[in-house]
Length: 137
Ligand code: 5GP
Ligand code: ZN
Image 1 (tube, rainbow, N blue to C red):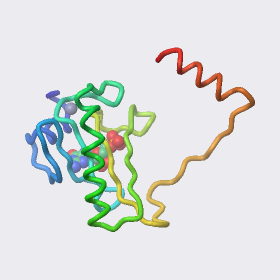
Image 2: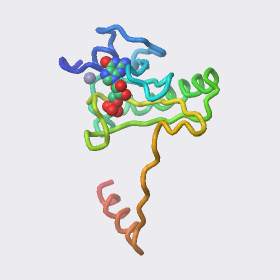
Image 3: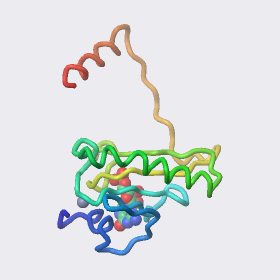
């Protein structure tokens, strides 16, 4: 646990929080300032800042849990969709630097999350960008 990390304390039960799911590695809680009613955060109990630092155990286990909670939300809320979001770094909108996944129930025309403005690539640019990433893989 990281001493000054609020999500370490919430995930590990040091501070009380409304919990929807818990196992030995994770806790899923209700977001304190929800984008929509039912907004859930899935937190690993172990401290890691973000996706880039995520360990393999968490990587392997997170997605099935998110799927299970998403299905439960869909069944209960009868929502039209669900966003699964995950921010890495301040520039990407991360405000709490302990890895977490958002699940946000969505309804037709709710406009809760605005779509991004799209760009376009010049001829051959997408391939060049793809190759620039690929060389680090
Ligand atoms: P981020 O912007 O880092 O992806 O998301 C952080 C989320 O954590 C926000 O949606 C925010 O409302 C939520 N949050 C911040 N502090 C607390 C807290 O103390 N308790 C709970 N339940 N959620 C929190
Ligand atoms: Zn932490």
